[in-house]
Each structure stands twice: as C-alpha cells, then as structure tokens.
Amino acid sequence: MPRVRNTQPGRTGSPARGGGRGGGGGGTPGRGTPGRGPTAGPSRAGQQQQGRSPSRKKRRFRPGTRALMEIRKYQKSTKLLIRKLPFARVVREVCRDVGGMDFRWQAFAIMALQEAAESFLVGLMEDANLVALHAKRVTLMPRDVQLARRIRGPEKGFASL
Image 1 (cartoon, rainbow, N blue to C red):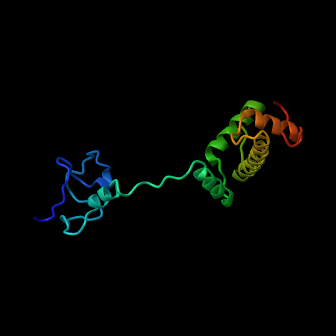
Image 2 (image 1 turned 90 degrees about the vertical axis):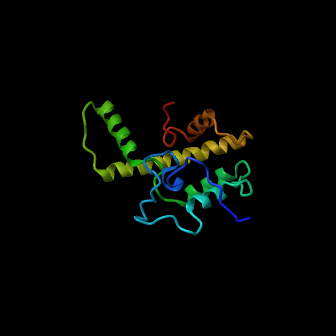
Image 3 (image 1 turned 180 degrees about the vertical axis):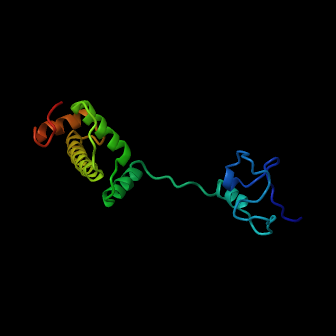
C-alpha cells in the first residue's frame, strides 16, 4: 500500500504564514514563491505537524532553572532594562508635577538619569535579596525592600518611606 500523507480536510493556505486563521491565503503559495505550485518534497506544513507529534516533547526545566538562566542573561548584558520612551514620559511627568511647567530635556540627560535609576534599583534589589536570604526565604517581599532601604540610610536608600 502506498504511503500517503493525511491532511486535515477544509484547511487551505500555509499554516506557517497565517497561523491557520483563514486570513485570505486561499490556497495560493506563500509570498516568497510566486507562481510555484505544490512541490514533491516535504512541505512546511508536514514539518510543523511532525514537530507537534507526541514523540518530541517540549523541553521542561526544573523549577528555578529558567529564572537562573534569565538572571545570568541580564547580568551579562549591558543594555538598559527599562524602555527608553516610557521612562522619558515618567521623567517629564514628574518634572511637570514638581516644577509646574514643561521643561525641555536633552536625550543624553534622560539617558544619564535612566542609567542612574537602573543602577540604584539593581543595587536595592541585590540588598533586598540578601535580606530575604537572611530570613531563609528565596521570595522577595516588600518588607525586604523596605528594610534594605532603611539599612542603607538616607543617602543611599532614598529615605522617604
């Protein structure tokens, strides 16, 4: 008996492109292959269906492993963690609330302020993590951050609580 691929009835278009939502694909080939018909080799749809088979499971990490991988990833990187535009909006809003009028900001000044803010927050989270570890916990709680700020003092801890 010949080997025949069993496809789902009523599905047209390439599931790799449109996600199978019927967004006007209509059975024509993908954008990258104008004028080509169906090919004899394995198609993308067949490869995706094979990827979903129960024999190939998605890798599961033990609890905490993914978090440690993320921590290492962000410790290696030097890029800013807070998005620039939302941070600039917050800076301008606080400046407007405190000063009573709109000030103009150089991009370099906002970037310097963001570097300082992120450095402060990373240091505070490190200290708060030490406080949580001292309490024999691994979960960071608001009281850990409050105690870390209190121990740091008014100069380094941004004292107003």
